[in-house]
Amino acid sequence: MSVWRFRLSKRLSWPRENCAAIAERIRRVEQRPSIHAPVFQLSDILALVIISVGLILIVGLAFDGLSVQRARALPRAVYVVGDWLSYFGKSQWELVPAGVVVLVLISGRWKIVPPLVRAAWAEIGALAAYIFLAIAGSGIIVNIVKQFIGRGRPPTFDEYGALVLRPFEFAYSFQSFPSGHATTAGALIALGFLVVPRWRLGLLLLGLVIAGSRVVVAAHYPSDILAGLIFGYAFSLWLAGRFAAAGWGFARGSTGSITARTAAIRISFGSPARVAILFAGLLDALVGRRIWIAALKSIGDGSYDDARSRRHRPDEQ
Image (cartoon, rainbow, N blue to C red; front, side, top):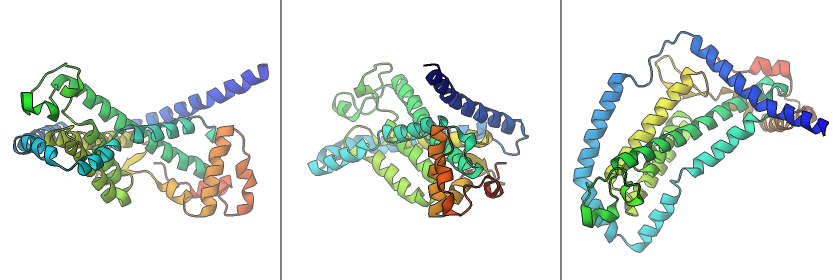
């Protein structure tokens, strides 16, 4: 029994060590003098709020009432497709995979794997944490704001009109503004531009289609959708800036632009041999012993070698 307790104690110490290492890295980075202004300064926030409010009012006055009539006139088949698309706007599609990746990676004993493999999984873990926090953070804020505003959803249009507000009603029928699905879609669009630029057009179209489906199924007005898209995108952009300031997952370019840190990921996926080494390192980290890395030495591309990995290790500055 004492042996099992010792092993359990050692395994439980790995997440603590990993969290401490992350915190120490953030502390070191934040102590460096910053040459970049925050992503959103006060003037930027005021301009964003003023422009957003103006656009939301214009869209609301022009299209909210009309959208209810048009949604009711749509064929049943269109409603079914819209309902199916709307289902993919639920946040669990991003939260669950991202959360699982973070929990798995934080549980590993990473000091036993080669530096390049460790750096690649650190980048993957940081981006997974970013996705989780961007979706969860924006979603929590929007769901709180909904209670304060209490706007009626389209099914209440005939009785109350499009502008009825019932704060703290705590009923689904009065939680229309902003749209939670559109907020998630806005975060997905930001993810495309910041993390996977090759997929940015696809994620942009996916986000807009998911957001628009909420109007088709008469769950939201167009102004709810626009507000959610703006907030989801802006929150995700702000969060990426905070990650970059901490030196975790993102970096700021010479012009202040934000880019994802993926150098180690790109190197590790540069050949089938390196991919095998990458996942062998993950298995070794999770079991706490160097088993699979040693077994794959016969691949012979040098990825298993600590000294060579250090020479190929991407700059973390």
